Length: 460
Image 1: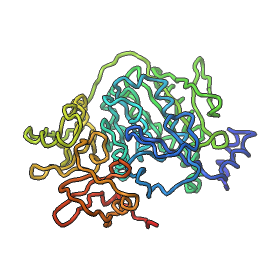
Image 2 (image 1 turned 90 degrees about the horizontal axis):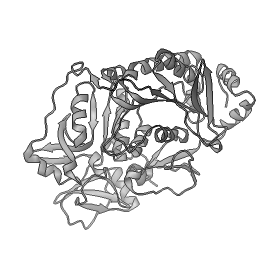
Image 3 (image 1 turned 30 degrees about the vertical axis):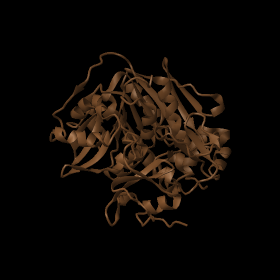
Image 4 (image 1 turned 135 degrees about the vertical axis):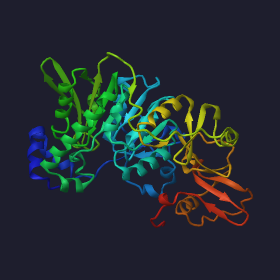
């Protein structure tokens, strides 16, 4: 791979005698890795090789056509770069995840870290999964829906909007937009777009993002910062910038196994150590990655919020007479409250209703809890999100289909369903996993698999 001259000079200063091995690694195929979804109670991926730093992570010996795998479409696993799964080690070492916590994934699309976080926190914790770029929110919503989460709010906000949430989050995760040097092998266009001007632009933008959200972290809380790039400007220099300008922050050491070949980088400054963790493709099975963790020291711990900063129209609770109708669609309905939001009905965990009422005044909430669907003439038009959620009632009618039928269903074509005697709403399932809705009428079957999700490629 022909690397940009300026990049090659700079990375050689970092790697020294390892430069040749690094360049050679970029000529080999990118590893294929997935993370199994514990919420779906199935593991369709044979164990080729496990990822050391992620209990549910696996390497695959080759890259299948994921689009044509119903298990992938049903959210049984997520295709994710192995190095970025190191987030699990950080979260498990810095905090007791059995506690009820509030966590912000600030730059969340397409959803790899949010789905990973959702697998690790308990059901009463709250994850705010935010994406700044509006056009990328749809893919985030799709992946959150597939994963089957029940305690995630999806927002579409600029980082500065979170400044109104002073001392609110226990953890903030920032996988910052970067120059992408660590993705040269996997995404060759990143190499073509690379320049020193872009590195400096990314570094400035990252500082702005960090500065905008830092006050929303609770004293005693943790900031996890990562990029998929190698240069100092976007990595260690930004961490040093935080520490210099925020004396109440300290760098946190994360324990790693020497056999993992993750490089722990320690920088001594005055009487303090700055810890960071670097992933190089010539040293381990993954792409380039950088991560560091900071802790905000304890002092005051109170929640302040400027609720009037972005006033929004009040949302109304669902009419009481409709609650029995909604209860029939989910398990353990007494654990949830039903709210109208953006013309949809959402089921929120009872302990998160107050958070929703506070946050909706500040943030643009696109999704909250479980999207149940739309109420039309006192009937529920169920959402695809509900179909994929483990909270759905066991009493819903189901129709098990073959692989061929499953793929035709997801193409929104005739899937040859015969001898169906039931009527009304039913779930199409494959190997016991829900794929989506159909509605069975007297003379036809209506396919409710989302048009924007449908499989467009040819099926052999």
